[in-house]
Image (cartoon, rainbow, N blue to C red; front, top):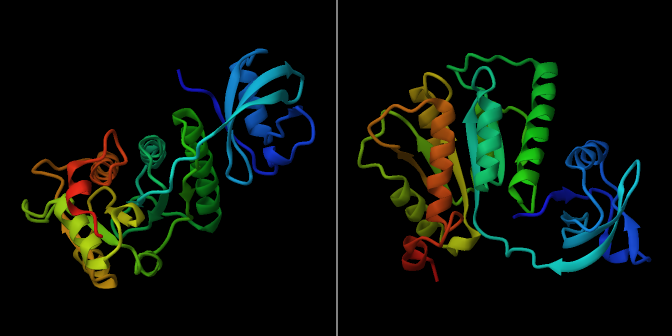
Amino acid sequence: MSLPHFYLENQVVAVEETAVFPLRLAPDDAKHARVLRLAVGEHVAVVDAAQDYFECEIVSVGDEVPLVRIAQRLEVPRPGATVLLVQGLAKGDKMEAVIRHATELGVAGFLPLACERSIVKLDAKKAAAKTQRWQAIAKSAAMQSGQCEIPEVCAPSTLDQACAALSHATAILVCWEEAPGTARLSSALWSGIERCRVPAHEARIAVVVGPEGGLTEREVDAFLECNERASLVSLGPSILRTETAGIVASALALYELGGLGNVSRSSFERDVR
């Protein structure tokens, strides 16, 4: 059974001067700890402000935060390839579902995209509130799934802002229902890595998915022109819902990069030396 995870924003565990010390949790995390009804003797995993990773034993549970001692220092997974999901703004709670499930998969960041066909239109105030909500969901999903880092969730961007942000990506995989069936995601991903001449474990892959109604031809052209390693990709003959496409495309990219289950065969065969 995996341990409950917590992230310490303002505490460095290694410099604590006493064997037993309080976990200085953010208010929402302290509330979550109380909901979990953590008991004396139970263990939790914490990632502190120095990005060090510890397993701690609960020594006492007070009204505010638990007192713990270090059980062991855990090995921080070696940084690897990352996947950024550029998700067209979708209506209802679809964005929340995408962020939650893609975080569980291991997506490193999210760039919500205001598209021509986006039904949702956000002014500055609503965009700020939505971004805060999405960040909270990403944090909760990272805690639940045992991620060592909380994904970054950016504020909604325009097409021009997104293209500028992706100009140096190792590869951009533009998922489009009009892409030919031969436009395979795996081929586009590895082509980008080879053309960029970076090791696979250093790759920074962007996956672009449109909203309901998909991307317009103008938007597709903009992404293809902003980076020479951008490619159209197909997710198969079925037309997927936007929230399904974002999760499926991210999972496929992570699998190719070895981020899901065992390292894929492709990553051994095609790693750039």
